[in-house]
Image (cartoon, rainbow, N blue to C red):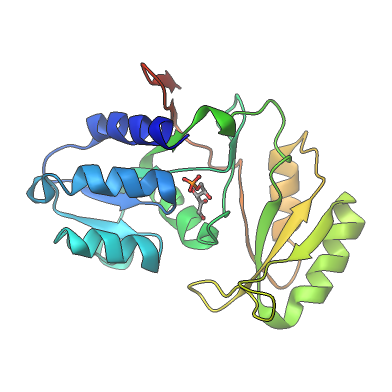
Length: 221
Ligand code: 5RP
């Protein structure tokens, strides 16, 4: 699948215009996109990054990291996804960067999502849905999500003894066994639970364009 990821990432370069500030997501597919940007870093003015991981890779190529508070609205955001349905609604957060990713997606005029074909589904939910939570609310949120959805919340671990900690200092619950027939309603309902920082359902703000890597890449809009 890595070749398909690379092909999708290369295709996304077509959306990058000279002098742009580009919103940059997180993950292995985006890593190929950053490598592609890195071949001509002077083409863009800088990047707004969604994670420490992407920031480190962008800086390696000398690409300036800009603060979203100073850039205002962005013309373009490029990011991957864990699942994508035909309405271009997504599950994201496998890499744990969902909150900053959702912020940048919201702040962008065009969201180009780059995926390999394994990410395409008819109904979202086979991939466990990530929910970022304030650490003290973890159990409360898990109970409420179980009651709301019937899905099985699993506390994400970094190792056997260490919890996964997001770039924002929070924890992640991964909700298993969901069949998300109404993504907008579920996104809104989970957002209502006190202690939820962000849910990795991108339904209210879906991708505008999905590029599925292959020979040739498929562009869905
Ligand atoms: C990170 C994400 C990623 O976009 C998602 O996990 C896909 O990752 P990859 O490109 O490695 O398959 O949402 O929070």
